[in-house]
Length: 449
Image (cartoon, rainbow, N blue to C red; front, side, top):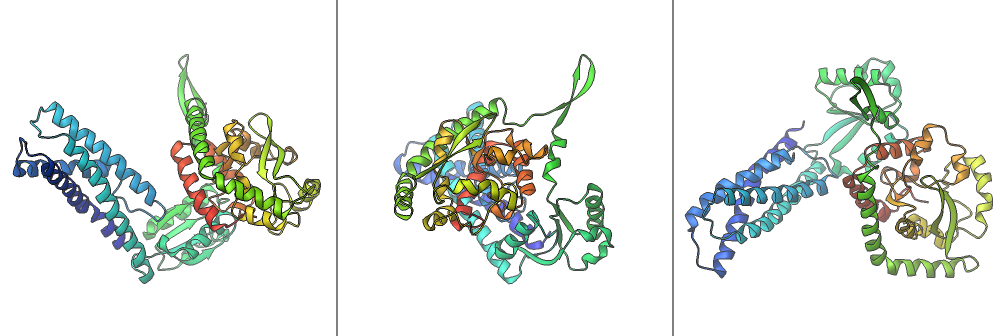
């Protein structure tokens, strides 16, 4: 690991302690300004503050807030700061109550909570910005070799090339043939290897891992997401007999209830916020293509049944008549960058995914979810292989992992692998992260056509 990354992580320990202590002191002075009848004097309160600030640091250790973070995890880091601060505050209040400490004002604890979240969050954002800024001068840069040059590998390569704030410098791009050669072709001066070839076998990856460990090279791998279900097993006893149970996706049982509540609440909020955009899109369609309807309705395959899928219309009337012919010509789930069926304003709607907005009503009706695999047409499902059909095991979604991992630039098999990974590893936190990342992807307008 680069020395600068270790320094930036290590310095957060004393800074957290300092800023949490400052938060308690500021809370004290604000409280004393409005109220003067106290049991504790400043010196006694200061001793309490210097002791209780260690609690924040300990909780932050358990929340892994001192592990070097990569770019793109800023929101996760700040959310852990909030969670850790609340947890520390609850423990502090519990200590005061159980020890029957003659504390002067519990309200000051809540003041300190707010200030600690504010101070720690602000300085960490500034510190992370400084770290990323130094990448421009090759300070802390990781020299990386990418193995793989197709599918998800292209997404990784383009992301690291176009966004220097990741802190990576690609020095080599090697195809899968490296596994049949002497691994010394990696050469010198490599800090890390990223295996982005999802077709690499476990034996090949294992051999490369051993080589990297021997040479002190960092190692990361994008797993074959289709094989992820192999980890979803549990050993139980049935009538005293050992039995391996396949664990179903977390989206069953209470997971489905939590996800449905999330869909309804978030869906209603987004419809209210985006209502002016709905009006803008409707007017644009009628002006640009007055002969057709505003909305496009189509039968799509959902969870166990078909439903009427809604979109803002982006194609000329009767464009669907050519769809079966296009499947034969371009393959299943095709996407054309210059589809002749799309009219002018429709291209704008597609570029920024505004044509998808009416699907919020599909979500409220329970036919779709905000996050999930995209709903296919029945003629597309006819071309599915057996493992492709695994993506049909949950409600389809407006957005998903594929949208934030390359969108239309990914081939269908990579698309399905991401859907399967999502199904097997769902959580509300994952939904929230995908939703936030989708906003960024949509605003950039990349990979959508």
